[in-house]
Amino acid sequence: MAILAANWKLHKTTAEAVAWARAVKRSPLAHRAEVIVMPGFLQIPAVAAEIAQSPISLGAQDVFWEQSGAYTGMVSAAQITEAGCRYVLVAHSERRRYAAEDDEGAHARIRAALAHGLTPVYCVGEDMDQRNAGGFRRALKEQYDRGFGGLCADEARRVIVAYEPVWAIGSGQPATPEQASEVAAAIREGVGARTGLLEGLRILYGGSVAPDNVGGYLLGGGIDGILVGTASLDPIGFLALLKAVVGNG
Ligand code: 13P
Image 1 (cartoon, rainbow, N blue to C red):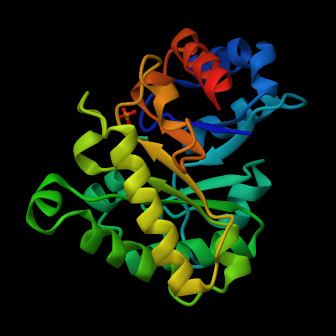
Image 2 (cartoon, rainbow, N blue to C red):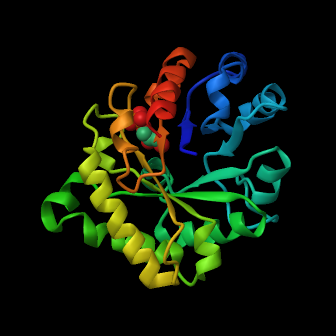
Image 3 (cartoon, rainbow, N blue to C red):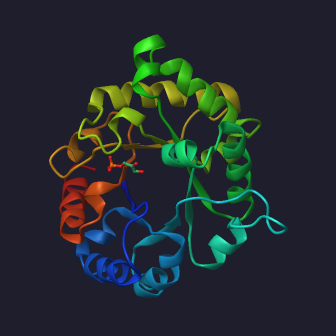
């Protein structure tokens, strides 16, 4: 089943979040993909209550690696799990940019998530300078080599990788399905060499995905699902995305 994950970033009041969940959970299409919604932390409890007994899963946008202690402002994997989340984004490019998260921190976050039964969605992606300079391979290799660190194959299988080229996020300029497939193959090979995971790594594509281009990514090119920002915010638009995913995935 294809994955369709909605990363709301810093959008939506609690009332808007609940209204979205109410609209989307009613759709019969929600049973035909793994739909994941990732609200802001403060909206998670209300969305969790609204989607209870529905096929929609919940994810958080970040996690800290320690479980408790003097870490002002941080949120732990145990707290996220307790709130009803099954997934958590790790090292989204906006966290890398605005909160100085790095690959070592990503590794610690991935381990903390796995230790609490959360599925980390590890975000990797090159910026345009890196793509122009040496291609995507070197930039991405550093990210997945450090992020996956010493994970064994069984641990690596429980991580989802989201390929989100920085130049494609929110720009209206998505990677082509061919580019996404090429990168996905390189990631699978690299993670396999690093962890021994030879098959079963799930990879999402994200970056300017919209209803009219989403289908192309799921046509057998090694992309297992989509991570979407802007086009996920309006419930009608999200249902259009879901329809396209279910039709092609
Ligand atoms: P956009 O869909 O707005 O390009 O954002 C993608 C993204 O960053 C999802 O995590």
